[in-house]
Length: 111
Image (cartoon, rainbow, N blue to C red; front, side, top):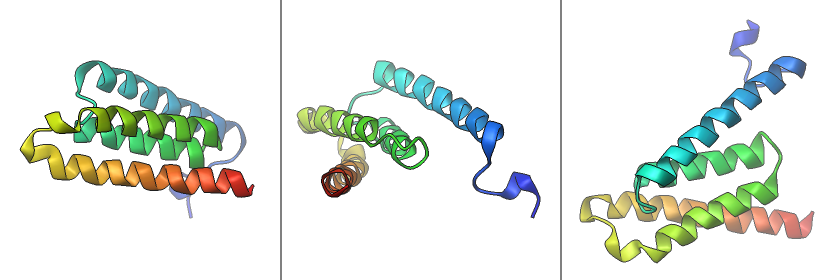
């Protein structure tokens, strides 16, 4: 299998790729916070993906929980203002954020 098809790279290449991904996530996250409502499904989905990236790839559970919790709580505070066409998507992603927070904090307590 050619190296470009391997899921996980090794050494310097791994560090370069994770650094590039982190930078892209950070830029997208900043833009989403500035331009999108806290309940927007795109913003919530980005927070979900970025928090999983922090947890799974960067092995930073504290940052993952902080990011997921902030996104969840910010959206919860504005839930009454969610447009009807986005409500289902927003609440589904919020549930996934909450599930991850529960899982990750349980892992931290056990570990």
